[in-house]
Image 1 (cartoon, helix red, strand yellow):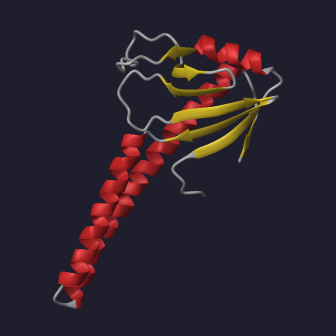
Image 2 (tube, rainbow, N blue to C red; image 1 turned 60 degrees about the horizontal axis):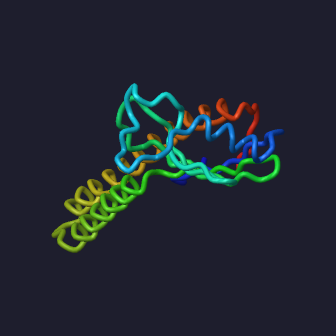
Image 3 (cartoon, one colour; image 1 turned 135 degrees about the vertical axis):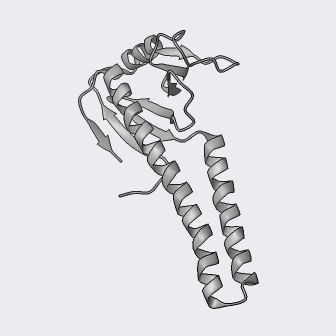
Length: 163
């Protein structure tokens, strides 16, 4: 089991680059300056930017969800190389939270008067750090799996290769 906060895989297809680009343009709402891509006003599956041989998109949801992955890809001959990664602000918040837990851990180690107090003081920031990472990891993986299923359905392919 890989505990990375991104996911990479390759979709094999028998479609040409132009055909994949056309399918993605038909299923991707252009990204707006103001993010209003939630609710019943969006009729497409994704929103973002579709280029000539690549795209950067996100799935459309009916609610706000910070764990929805950013999907980036490169379209080559008969394959689409896809990378899913978490939103930058969510990743930054997780890093700051875990770093503050580690600072609290170091402070507890330096200021503790006895070993029994130290073991209790150490356990709190460790548990908080593990909880924050697990929350981020499992929420992202759940949303990445859902987004992968939608993307495969849009492209009309039946199998993928994991990297």
